[in-house]
Amino acid sequence: MTTRPVRKPFAASFLPLSLAVSVVAGAGLVASGGTAAATGTVPGPRTAATGGALQWGDCPASVKPAEGQRCARLSVPLDHADPTGPRVELAVSRLAAGRPGVRRGTLLVIPGGPGSPGLQRLAQKGPALAEETGGAYDLVAFDPRGVGGSAKARCGLAEEDRWMVTLRSWPAADGSIGANADRARRVADACARNGGAMLRSLTTADEVRDMELLRQALGEEKLSAWANSYGTYVAARYAQEHPGRTDRWVLDSSADPDPRRVAHGWLADMAKGADDRFPDFAAWAAHPDRDAEGLRLADRPADVRTLVLGLAARLDREPRATAVPGAPLTGAAFRQALQSALYSDAAFPAFARLAGQALDPAAVPVLPPELSGAMPDEAAAVTVAVVCNDVDWPRSVPGYARAVAADRARHPLTGGMPANVTPCAFWKGGAVEKPVRLTGNGPSDILMIQNLRDPSTPHSSALKMREALGPRARMVSVDRGGHGSYLVAAGGTGNACGDRTVTRFLLTGERPATDVLCR
Image (cartoon, rainbow, N blue to C red; front, side, top):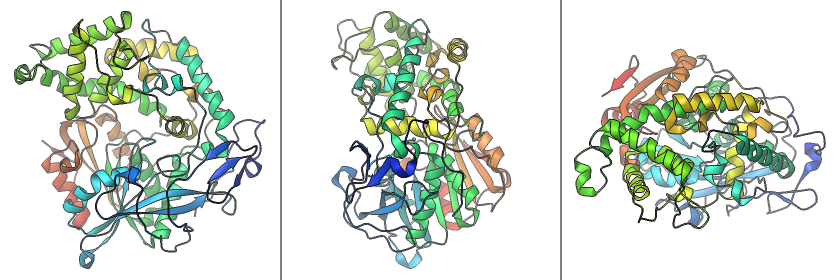
């Protein structure tokens, strides 16, 4: 196992790691003084990450497990630099190979986020993946620390700071960011005050270390993987640090891994991603087929853009009451609903319906689910912590104000949010470790797949990942829009050409000789 420097503490006033937490049997971690700092909620027997077999049992009903899906728990160090110190538990799940006679290994399903649960992704995508790969793999996933059934961290954030439209820093209607800066500072202070050692352990580096202990616990010499979105960065980091442990490695929807831009750059890229993707929605919303559905917004795609931008500006001035008390449809909420809708063609009708309701003075707009309530505190904590712990962010509020003004002019669809200040600007202790520069050193066993018009991880950013991986990788570009490319049958947004290429690689190891485009 790799070694690393001792973590930087939150601040001098915080207790040393060894004194800040203590283990309570069956209850995860609690901070000194009795304040909850972490919880592990997956039932079943413990197993040490020492190569011993995981003990599989029933999955919690909250996972909505697929048929045959089993769950276990994995014990890992809270701080990998102190392997004999306090430990936390991770939720692990498996769909066993459907054809043991032709089983070729374990394929790890790595979720995105940060903050997406692996067990639910396996429940949702596993059956289709098993069918696509002919039952040749044990499919395994885990909830990263801080997520789902794994040990949790908490920041103790006020409810108003846990709504998506406030946790994401949407500027005020006039473009000012004073309120954003105040909230970002408040969130960072709360996380520093309440998060403790558990919150500081929420890093990509520790997720990679946890993955390696999972490999050992599974008794596998090598792993294959299908990683999505933020998970591609986790997978690429693992491939760099454990090149001899990777078998067939698929990165689906990658971002720029430049250590100077990780996290901060990923957020900024969403502005370009929205611009790349919006024409797909505009063409859909202007198509005559929408007339019969009552969802046609304009006669021409260019007019759809004009309508959406005009409606956002009107809602900036005059927010509309919705069916959710205390949650008006503001310009920021409307832009956030658009950003979410761009992830999948299947979400287009709901956004078009919301736009129609906002245009109708007699209608009561219905907010999408992600804007209809506050996130749980632990979900907000992991969403913030990983990106703030991974890399140092700029600290100058005036610098953010200038960046927002420029971004609003260049990318009006996203209203300056991707360039705005976040809690990371005020994060106590800064990055936990120095970011890693990815290289092409290692076996040539990586296949990337990427939509040309991705609203979250733009194709131009994926090309940066491709460049970093060099001879280790090949890249399949898919002429489609949306976030996530592989497995149409599992609710993805890819196409048959892309699916065939990835499936062939997973089953035979064969990749294209050069990077290819799937029309």
